[in-house]
Image 1 (cartoon, rainbow, N blue to C red):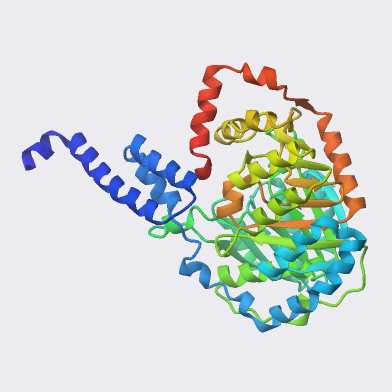
Image 2 (tube, rainbow, N blue to C red; image 1 turned 60 degrees about the horizontal axis):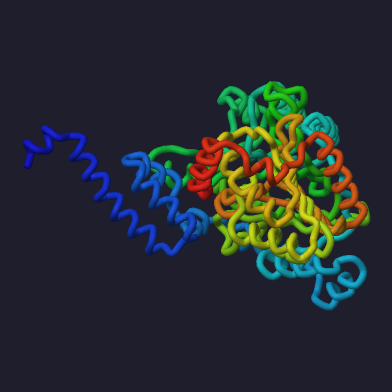
Length: 484
């Protein structure tokens, strides 16, 4: 036996691989996960010897109920819960708002209030910032005006030109006595140790989100903090698709980068704040004292109703996906979606197709090239399916479109960090602002129509004629859609 192993090392390793793979496959099946995800992982174990095991080892393990997420304690803090309760709108009051402006969207409000205790907030002013150059111009000015504290949370925080500009301002404000807390994702960011130490020396508290070190690599590599949040003095905040990187400021080395971010002033910042504090306690292992300064009383800043939806593997349900699903099913007239990655689960795909077939105008705006070849081909594999349900699909040709937006009936909008894909719905920590306002939503449709000017509409007959090689690439990448 020993001689056989020594003389047939590869075959022996292959046998060991498949023995482990069979055991792993049984474990995956017993977990009763999404059938598509289950099949994808089992297929990778069968057709990719050794590599399939690595894929599952690094990306496939389920930690939604893992104890490392149960350590998150901010929601157990009575003070935070008190503030959330004060902001909640009662059922009777919701009925009044339904008659005034919520219409079918009242179900979205109820869903998030029941699942996540996230209130519908009033008295907000919401500004739309197109592309990084506008976002950072506005953000830097607001940071300069900070009086008490600044909270930042980013998936990508790089030590490049725009990153150094932000660090310069933050260090200056810290030296003025402003309390600054920063969370950056360890995998997504390229923040140098030198700049991190510089911020710490200036008095800035900064922590990485789930650093990836052996032997904890498998537990942490897959679940990333994809949020982009800034909170200034508890009254002003930013949320959307734009990270801290030169790639988001035009002109950039990747060509033209089209993105959307929001500047919010008003009571919705209290919900953004609670999510930041939740993550802060998690990454810092601190029990931060919740004071009134985190949730200050404000006069009405505007007339817009906003609800914050957040999700991640620490939650019992995929809140953002469920909110999007509910919004699509509530549509009577139109659905406008812009997303860089369209790899929907069965629920969202079915909701969109049935909406179109019952007479709702559905338009999808996607990048033509994208910044990931695998995601691009996986996205393309869904296009014929939606075209056959009379959904209009547009390819953005000017550059990369990275905005993550949705508008329903010209009355309800979603802008945030969540893509239309498995990773955003199930794996990453995401956050979206849901805007219940007709005037704001009409602005979002106008922006959508402006973007269409830089698009080509996909013709179903021409799409069917694309080459066999492309179709094979699409089908292959679609198999791994839950992993992308």
